[in-house]
Length: 61
Image (cartoon, rainbow, N blue to C red; front, side, top):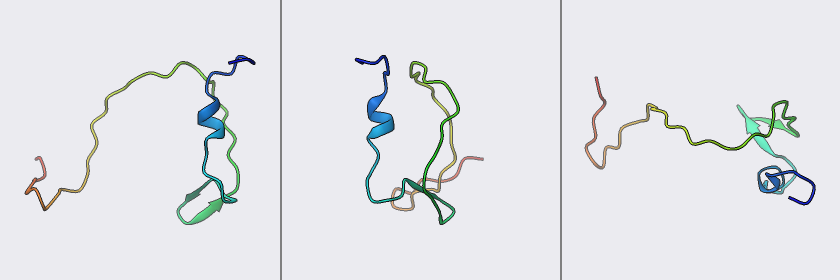
């Protein structure tokens, strides 16, 4: 926090190997973040996932 930047690990803790991430099998070489680095907040969301056949879980209706 010497320079007032709180999230050093988020920006610089990325995997190495030439490319940062892939979108639909298209190689993206860099990303520019246009937002603001604010304090992180905890949010809870409900998502749909595939059922786990091993546990017998069924889809909600």
